[in-house]
Amino acid sequence: MKSKGTLIAGFITGLLVPLLSMYLIAQFRPELMAIQRFDFSEVKHLNMQLMTITMLPNAALFFVALRFENEDFGRGLISATMLLLAAVFIYRFLL
Image 1 (spheres, rainbow, N blue to C red):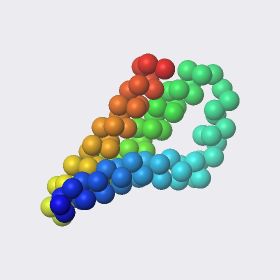
Image 2: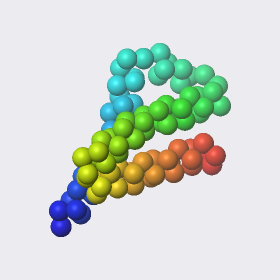
Image 3: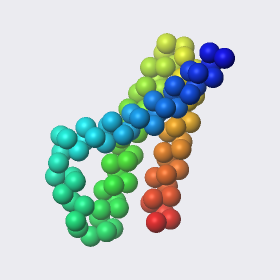
Image 4: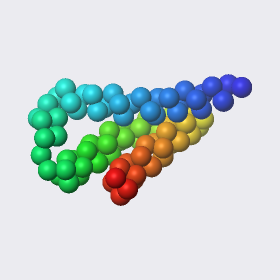
């Protein structure tokens, strides 16, 4: 049962870390939020890049989890990252 809880904790962490990263980017680079008034294709391209960059801390956490032999937490992180990558794919190609 411990592995199920660790897997869920990794999944939740994998969803929250990109949100925290996006918040920090918005705080340190407020001009990126002002760009939202420009051409839709430029905004879409910038948003896709931001969403992809905010997933980089998930990769770092994944390797830290593997380093400390916590595979279930890493599995949850990868699951959340794949879900977010699917959302980026849908945003990029289908919207």
